[in-house]
Amino acid sequence: MGAFLYGVSLQWKLDIRSKTLLITCYIVPLLFFVIMGGIFTSVMPEARYTLIQSMTVFGVTMGALIGLPPSLVEIYSSDIKKVYKANGVPLFLGLALTNISAYIHLFLMSIILYIAAPLVFHAEIPENPGRYFISLAVFIAVSLSIASIIGLAVKDQAKTSMFSIMIFLPSTMLSGIMFPMELLPEAFETTGKLFPATWGYKLMTECVFKFESLFPFLLFFVSAVVICDILLRRIDK
Image 1: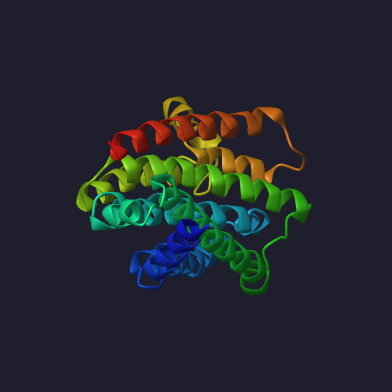
Image 2: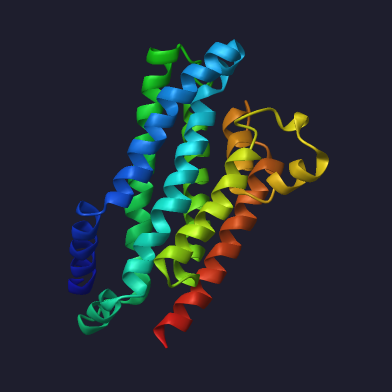
């Protein structure tokens, strides 16, 4: 219990001084919402029906892929890992705590978008809020699990940012939030299905839960958990 509380305390201190967390989980997503929300609703008035979902997909994807990996690199590729071991804190706790912290921040950001979009751009509120937030919860969890692989696999901050951006850009561009998937070439449409953002947007805009939309999330999450476990075992050696 003492080790757990120490880990929580250490993660809280890291979060407080993390500019990356503030920028990627709040500032950039909300600025994108203010600027692109106005453009979307002006050029395509029908965009207001899915504005909440599209802005949320962008914010969660950015916060997860670009915000989380640097925090993991800071823990597992620095002296913080030694501090964990010296105080008897299991290494997996660092991964768990950073994910929980990022999850809370991304959920708060999503709630801000959910409230602000109807007020600022007269966006349509999802027909079933309960189903929407369940879909959002699943999407955030899966996005963070994928981001965790980057943070554990890449040990250099600069390379981490490069890999994060390489995944972030196609995730958002091919997800359907910018333009309908039907307008994309078949190869790009197929490639888009390799990223959680595409399925997150699809799941949050559907009226009912469909197994074919949930199954990819299960596949992504289980695969990510297995890979993260392997990476943690290598780090612990």
